[in-house]
Length: 512
Image 1 (cartoon, rainbow, N blue to C red):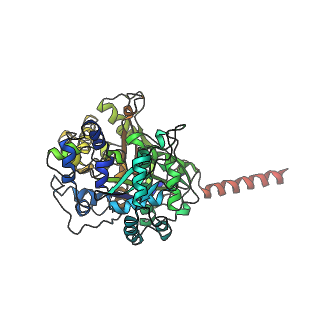
Image 2: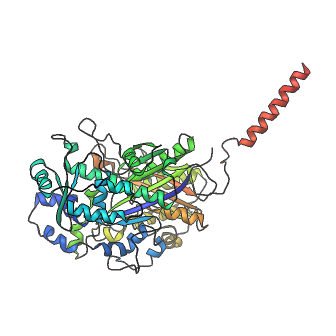
């Protein structure tokens, strides 16, 4: 059995300035605790335009128009820098404006819970008709729109969640049940955002890599939201809902949840399913989280910065059978933070980094690039959280010095050579290792690097069920073109063995 490969990826961002104020947890909590706060009054003054979001260096990196190495050439902070000639469409995906995304919310809604007024519907329908990935069949689901009186009545009398665009009320999301808190309008809104942004990432995966959706066998969704009703709060299934939207008619699927570590868990699960022969083509996908919009907004406003957490994130990755070309997922080199690992930094790094490397007789320096928590430091540093990726690289390098994999004087260079600046939005699960998969695949296909390690970490204690946190990792390696990993018998060897057995059997018959 050969190792599975990473056959393609898709990455999307969605600019959602109005959702910051109306759906981000920091802002909605402030409205409850301190509705007249100066912060809430200042939020509109600190919102970026779509053009600013597109030209932002970290965002251009996320969709593949810039490499992490090119991003590191920009002096921090980045928010006051612009990429000249920046395009909303990138090598791996796209940045979608809010109005188009609201239209997509309506398109993915199969229970008629999203109501958009006629004027907005007419405008956004024309925009989406010109979108390269939105089909005529999808656009037709927008219909003609609804009357504003009906929308306002649903909000005022039936607890619908308002939808704003350019600070104007243009629609709502209705609740799906009168008393079920899991189907209230706010939760349905969050879940439709996950579905729509996940579907957009999936469409970009298919388009950018010329993949036939009918060849996808299984889909695993790994965002941080959970859909269900009062009898099964996290029952799911985002995966199959997204697969339906993008035309994967031969796929089934399920959801995996593990806070920020879920994408790497899912990558390992997909690799295992393909390696075992259960499925040939497995897609892992995740949509964005409205709750985390403007999460550090207070610190950004306090420092007179734009609110940088103004985009939803999404990604999709295809894992397939070994084709002798694409990078392989080393399922024998998987790291894991176990229940008994402990929480000290050294114990965590040992379990996630050095334990799998030891199994492969590799040194820390044998991994060309480590993709850890790729949080954008432009966002986290003003909030007091520091430069998260750099902190991780320093810990990995320090452990390398302790193991004598590198000399102490090589430590500063280790961070530069084996690390990268963070460029992912603080969407929880989105930065956790996976943003580099597209770059890693390209670098290996171009013979620039041989190995990368994808590392995901998660804060399980947030669920109040355990004080533990979590982490897993897996090594991606350049494909050497060999279609067998030495653990099985090739087809030719089987034929040879059968032939020898037949000769021996015939010899016995003749002797008898």
